Amino acid sequence: MRESLYGLFGYCSIIIGIILLQNIKSMPAVTLALILGTIIGEALRIEDQINFASLRLKTLIERLTHTAAADNDAYISRFVGLLMLFCTGSTGILGAIGEGVNGDSTVLLTKSVMDIFAAFAFAAHMGPMIACIAIPQFLFFQHPLLECRLHHAAYRSSDDW
Image (cartoon, rainbow, N blue to C red; front, side):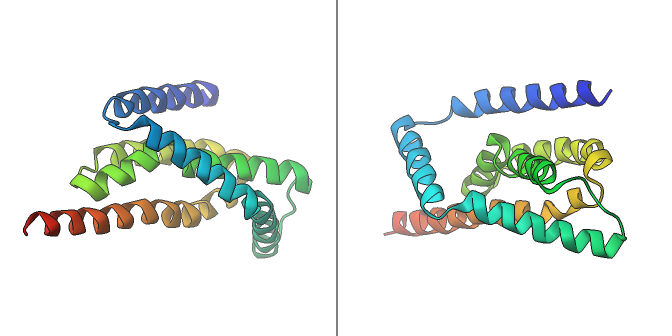
């Protein structure tokens, strides 16, 4: 059943992504943003920082729950994979932008329904660590949401002149 859910969530995300891609008016700008984001991420060594933070979080969770998890490399690999799944999917990013620009929360609500069921399925492997992904996810999606609201408000106020 778990494998069926994973496939279903993947298909839903792909379909939503395809539908949202049809609304993009400037694909070169999106491509440039992806390239610049990759360069900045590599320069700041974000992957190393995420790995370090996940080990610290693993140690903290193990102390609080008095348990020991798998070896560090396997744990980091799973945690970072889930972090990327929950935080960098097109449904979350485009949903946050859509909410910020036009107040439409449909995509974010759809993502939240998929995420809650995916989190239950992944919790069997990761335990309480899966709940910790909510913190970076919240921070990650607040940035595009607030940025779009700020730019949209500035754009609307310039139309009043």
